[in-house]
Length: 331
Ligand code: SAH
Image 1 (cartoon, rainbow, N blue to C red):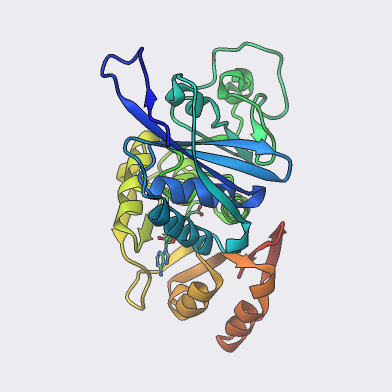
Image 2 (cartoon, rainbow, N blue to C red):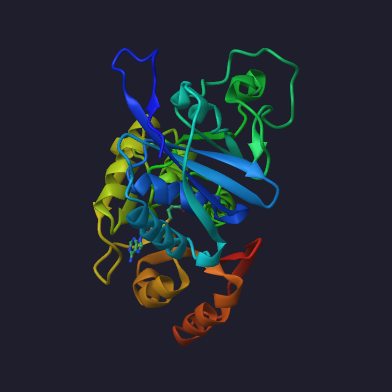
């Protein structure tokens, strides 16, 4: 283990770095797991089909407990534990890792949404030529870009781009995971401004997306009723902070908990959970839906189980959308 002594740092602080080598599709799960293990930040270095996710810690992490936490994170993300290759303490050159870490988070575009970390500045700096879609923003699979170069003219002329500010690494839902992207696309397609219920809000990304699509009140001065719930109180606190970052905190009713038969119904209900949880909650989710229901977090191999439960509950017509091995159902 190597203690990082930052001679430039007036507080003379030490940093500890832990490198986790995994298969590339597991990187978001590992970033999440490291943050849950109290990392101050993570950095992901790609190397072909494998990636190294580096977590920075203030104190030496307990490797065995970090490993257990990472396995939990892989379970939450429905990723096989075999993707985890090795954990090792790293030697890191003296540098401003926080600045480096921030640079590694790029805005992600999903349909009309752009998910960006708070430190990337608003569009307006670059007066480049017009473009059909925001430039400098990458698709979720891309690797470079900055909102600094988002076409300011496109925004000014009423582009429907919705920017979602999310502080990455604190809870699930930074826009890069397939299950979140499927939900954002379904929200773009089906949400028309009625009441909205986000079950398992994580970072709050989906509720913030819905609020961002309704920036102006109706003729009575009201905004749509948006509820976001999560069984994890930490996620709810983070989601609130993110909603504040987006200036929509007053418009979202955040709750610690889940759906049940007393939940007031909403025009659009979005549940990005896991297939077993969806199957268990399905009667309550259907009961809470008076318009459409979006179900995400379902692996290809789990689709039959969800379809069977939908059938038992009388729902036989639905739309299926895929992204990699992930599936979302809109009923
Ligand atoms: N909505 C975000 C986050 C999805 S991750 C996105 O689309 O990216 C799933 C979240 O659901 C986690 O934050 C987890 O704590 C929460 N969760 C798990 N089981 C739940 C349940 N039964 N009811 C409500 N939330 C639940």
